[in-house]
Amino acid sequence: METFKKGDKFGKYVVNSFIKKGIVAESYTVLGPDDMMYFMKVYDMDSIPREQLFEGKEVYEIQLCRELSSEKNENVIQFVDKGEVRKGNASYHYLVTEFYRGDLISESVAKDGAFDLEDAVQITLCVLNGLSYIHSRALIHNDLRPSNIMLQEMEDGMLMPTIIDLGHISYMVKGRPTFSVEDLKPFFRAPETFRAVYTVKSDLFSMGALLYYLIFGKSPWEVDLEPANGDKRKVADAVKKARKQALVLETEEVQLPDYMKAILLKALAKKPEDRFASAAEFGQALLEQVMPELAKQMEDDNPNAQQQTEDQVADSEAPIITFKKGSGNGFDYVTGRNELKEQLRKEVLFALQNPEKAVQYKLPAINGVLLYGPPGCGKSLVLKSFAEELGFNYTIIKSAEFGNIYQEGVLDNLQRMFDAAEIKAPFVLCFDELEFLAPNPNAQSEEVTITPQISVMFSMINNCSEKGILVAATTDRPDLVDQAIMRVGCFDRVFFVPQPDFEARKDIFREHLADRPCEELDYDELAKMSDEFNAGDIAEAVNEAAMTAAYNDVPISQKILVDVLKYKNPTYSTKTRIGFNKN
Image (cartoon, rainbow, N blue to C red; front, side):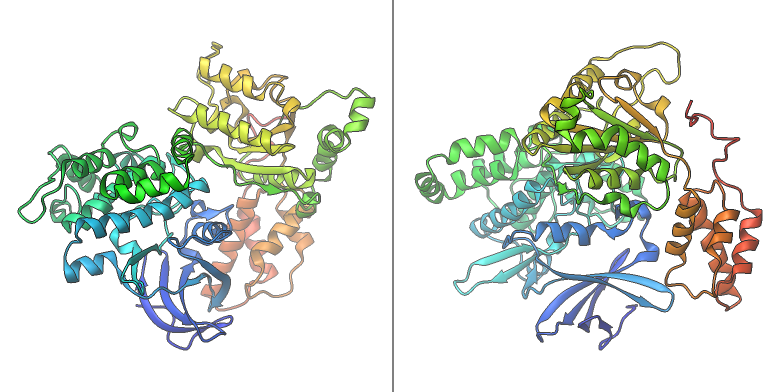
C-alpha cells in the first residue's frame, strides 16, 4: 500500500497518482509548480542500508541521476529536482524527473507481440546511445530490461526509447554491490553478476538480452523459475543450467539472417571477453549489418569515425574520473581534531600550497599520505576534508568496489586513473580502505614477498609527485596493506586518526539528535561521558535512547541519554586498541 495519497505535498510538488512500490522506493506522478506532470521516486531512508548511500548520506540514484543530467541525452531520463520530507518520525528523500508518455517495452510486447527486425534494431540503437552516455560517465546501469525502458511514438511514427529507471546505477562493482540485487531480472543478468561482478560488459550482455526480447518476445534461455520459490541460490542454479543449452535463434515465427544470429551470440557470450567491447562497437555492428546505407552515410559524414570507434573500444573499460575541485576550506567540516589538522597543514599542505617556499627550503616531495585508525573514527571524513582543504582537483575511490590489484583488469584501470589524474593535475587520488586495493599477501606470516602486481603499483605511486599527483588513502588495518607500498617513496607521510575528541563528539551528538523530539540537552556532559566513543558508538547510543523515548511517548531527555551511556562501552578503547598504536 502506498505511503502518500493524492494531494500530499513534497515541497512545490503535489502527488497526482501512485505508480508502484519497490524494495526501498515508491513511484508517483506529481504536478509541479508549472502545472506540468513529473515522475517522482520517494525513498524511505530508514529502509536503505548505509552501504547503498552515496558517501553515507545521499541515495545513489539521486546523486548519479543528477550527475548524468549535466548534459542532456534523449535516451536517458532527465533529472529535474530533489528534496527531503518527513512524515511522522520517518525521513524520505525524493527524486523528480521528467515525465514520459508511452508504453514500457514490456507492456508493448504483452499487448502487440514482438517487434519486427528493423524496429527492434532501431530501438536497440537508441538504447545503446543512452547506455554509451552512461558508460562515458564511468557508470554501470546494472538493470537494463523491458520494464525499465519507455517507448514514445514520435510525430514521424518512429519509436523513441528512454531508459527511465536508474535504481541500480553504480560505479563498477567487483564484490560488494551498492544496490539491492533482489529485484534484478535473472534472465537479463550476465553470468558474472551472480558472482557480484558488474562492469560495462555485463551491461552489454543485458543489451543482448533486450534485443533478443524485442525480436522473440521473451528472454533468452527463459525457463520456469517457479520451482525455485524465490530462493536466490536455486534461481542462479536454474539460470546457469538453462544457459548450458544452445540459444534458440530460430522459430516458426522468427527466421533470423546469419549476421543477426552472430550479433546476438556475441552480445550474449558467457565470457565477458568474448562480448562486444563497448556500446559503440555493438551499435556499429548493428548499423553495418542491418542499416548499411545509414552506416555508410555516417562514415562519409565523419571520415574519422572508424578511428574514433577503435579508440572507444580500446578504452571501453577505462574508468573515467568523476572529479571535484577542492574548495580550500575543507577542514571547516571537521570539528575538533585540531592536532591532526595542524599536522596535516604543516607536513603536507604547506609545501603543496606554497611551491616556491618548497623549492627555496628544499622541502622533500610527497607522493602519498596514509590515514589510519580504528573503524568509525572518521577517516573517510578527514580524507575528503583534506582533499577539499588542499584545493586541487580530486576524486575518492572506494577500494572495496574498485577491486584489488590481483583481480583481472584492476591494474590496467588503476594506470588509467593515474593517466587521467596527470592530465587534470594538480590532482589528489584518494583511496578509501586501501587494504582492499593492495592486500598484504603475507599478513598471516612473517615472510615478505614482493609480487609483480605490487611492484607495478609501487611504480605508479613512486615519484608521482613529479606529475602533479598526490595519493591519499585510509585504512583500518595498516598490517593488512601490502608492506611494499608502505615505505617512503609511496606513502611518505602516515597519520594516526584518533577517536573523535571532545568537540567532535559534541558535534556528532548534535547531528544524530537533530530533527528528533528532544528536551534541552547538555552536550558537554554527553561528550564527557562518551570518551573514546567513535561515531558509530554515539549513533547507536542515540538510537537506543530514541527507542526508549518513543516507547514511553516522551521527548529524548538528558536522563535517558545518560542512562544509556552509563552501561555502554566504546568499541575500541585505549586498552583494546591493538594494531592502532601510534608507535
